[in-house]
Length: 541
Image (cartoon, rainbow, N blue to C red; front, side, top):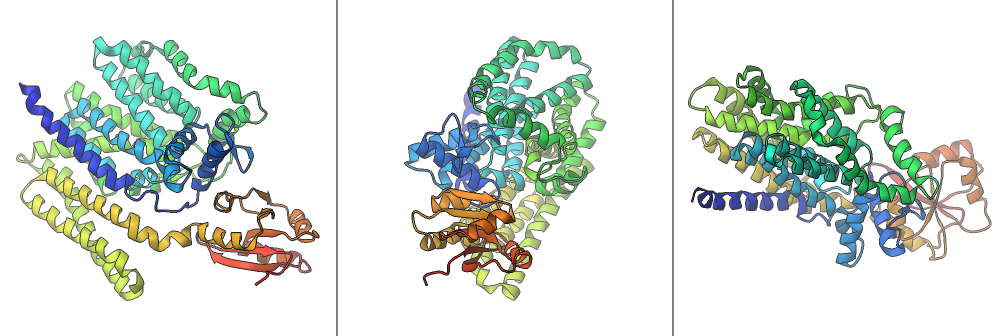
């Protein structure tokens, strides 16, 4: 009878998360064109998978694609086949699907750790986290790896706290690890190894490491991932790049995006606002907690977040999305703080310090954003009024309603107000704001102009700029060079040649090779820079 009473509440929680997830992740996800970085490359790989059958040996621009394993592209290409063709939306779709799954995983793990309400609040926090929203709507592999890692930890905790189901849980735990190897490579082995090893050692339960079925687990993960790696290793370049160059060079060597060790100290918490204000409450609770079991439950997400933060900070290559795997852990800690703060609100300063003040600060921020956006639009960008004023109205309304709930000590309703307001803002911005910036951010419009200038049989060439968007939108293979001598040879050819380059590179070439003849056929503003289409022959128009 008790379980029957709980069922409707559980169903409503799951449905509410689905509605919020749709607004945050799915609504008009295909409206946005391909924006750099990465989206154009993944989408071009998908097209060549679907149209040229490159499922086992992925290619991009007709050459082997060995930067990342193919799981993300398999999903995007499979969805594209079902949808009837490769588009921005079909290629992007794996990210929102896994982002929604991630909400349910965090809800389930939070419920096991701290109870139903804490799990629900943690899922709400994660849904409204800026970095999570961004990569839920981006053609990128990081969301899938983050959710697979969360599933691994959900299964670990299920086995760790349930001796009867332990063997089953621990064996299942290695399935997302194996899939992760097919999605991002060996980093999906390193992450759970670091977190679980650190947690068990710090908990002084290091002997439990041998209960994790490591031998059987390795066999399960290899059974999932090894066949594809074995097949592609028969062709030069694939296995070496995937296993060593991509993983080890990015981590230990000076790859792209090399940044100082403290880079994530500046970027991680801002991406978790406003809920980063709740984290001190969880840390203080952990320090003061006397109950050993409760302390252990708090320790797990703390170790999850801190150990991976240190791991990625030690790498020379740093990008904001690399920190995404710690955001579910921070959401769990925020959900714990909210839940325990609501529970003890009658007693004291803990309620005010750990919950009321952070929530009040978030609501004030909503009101400040509302006023600031309106003022900026009215004074400096009136053409943006139609897109931005509704956002100001939504955030102002959310701030006011949230303060009403906060005054009445209805904490869950305050969090729901913050999250639902964020969901409405994201849903609106996905249409109105994206429509305003689509052409400026994406190469699509410029590629349409290129198609008008280049005959079907002509080759497209790019100088000093790897941008697969031009291959995707023009449906042409492109030659790429960073060598000025090769550029000179192209332009001095007897045949007409068309070359895409940044305006700054065009000026550099003119400065060093002033006798070289180049005609500008088109010039557009694309993704924060002027881009030119030049040729060795004048345009017909």
